[in-house]
Image: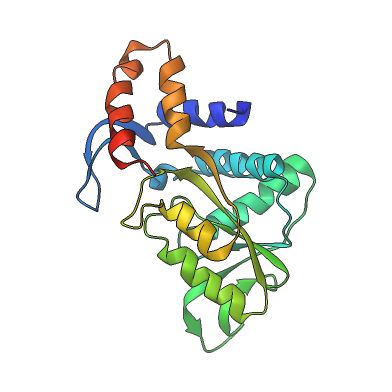
Length: 215
């Protein structure tokens, strides 16, 4: 695990963005942990998330021309990540996002920001069913651009009915990398190494969950 990933894990636990206990997911599945990306809800927290995204981009060495944020969750992620790349790494990338409904006046169209062209990196927080990514890929394709990768905060690494995780399915279907700042495997490694008994007590439940549902 890289230092920025370890820092990210500590941060999301300290700020209760990642919590351990008994949770019921939207799917109805019971989970021993819950990652609530909606709690990146202040300027400082969003800035930290964007810094982590920028670190992941640098670590992966992914090549892209523009950052695209699918409405609505991806919009602040795209702009903040572009800002973090410029501020921290002197890499100045354009960004754009889509509107849910096409605007008939003013700018017009359903895209805002830079031209959606060349190689495109999609920003999102987590992937559940992958619907937003598939819709975004259609927008990219319809504008004559090419999807080059997807950037996430976390990959739960859970298998779907196909036997693959949603992230693995996206990678297979579009032949692009899906980059995640942290994964379920990283969480388990963190718990194994933790000195805090309040954290370590959750290790077995998380490991059992991975054994049952992991891809």
